[in-house]
Image 1 (cartoon, rainbow, N blue to C red):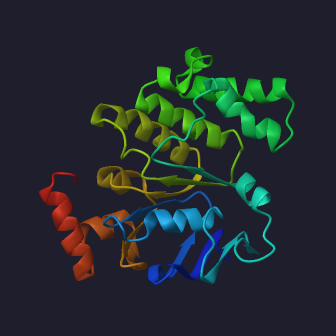
Image 2: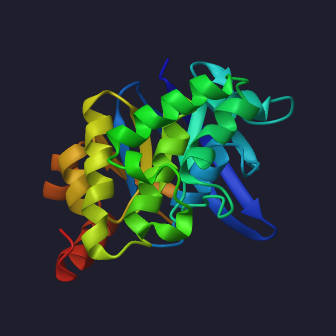
Image 3: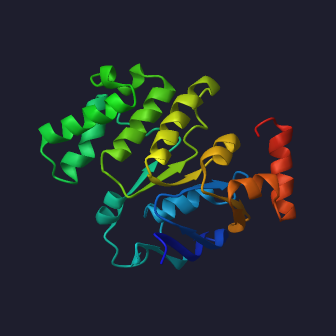
Amino acid sequence: MSFLEIRDVHKRYGELEVLKGINLKVEQHQVVCLIGASGCGKSTLLRCINGLEAISGGEIRLEGDRITGPGVDLDRLRRKVGIVFQSFNLFPHMTVLQNVTLAPIQVLGIPRAEAEARAMELLRRIGLEAKAKAYPDQLSGGQQQRVAIARALAMDPQLLLLDEITSALDPELVSEVLNLLRELAAEGMTMLLATHEMSFAREVASKVCFLYQGVVHEEGPPEQIFGDPQQERTRAFLSKIIEAGRL
């Protein structure tokens, strides 16, 4: 049994079917990168795993337990599965420290002093200890995104979902966020991320999945997907990426 199993998952919005039978397995400590053109279903899939979207068919299991469908405890699920979005989603009226400690205090019931000590440790780790009392609008985009990752890590998740987290950043800020992900990968954090950063996927991923028209069209280790893709659609997608100078 895999750590995360996605079995024949469908997602419809009225007549529009975005996910058309996704099958995917993620093992513990793996970094799995989802690649594909905009609109192929990457973000929708991540939102379904975290329970932000209800699936229309199939099932998702984490450590053997069903995490989709009726009767699922979403609060319990989100303690295990963290998600970080491209648009930071920090609370603008709260300091960095308050943003990072809010969920551990409110959801996990951790005493404030303990939550703040843990948050300061995370902020030290991401190089933003000095910004603990700053507000989000006083930070660069790269700093805000690192805070958003620290906020997710403060819940001590078993699985971290990352949705195009560098796409809203200026190019010079991308590397500081990717360096943090490299550290997390080296420490064994299980991550599933939708990304356009092909060089990063090639370097860090345990497995790369190419999504096309709502299904996993091809998957394999990065050296195979990027070096010897088997499917014509995968080859066509990567040739455009190479033309754009992004691989």
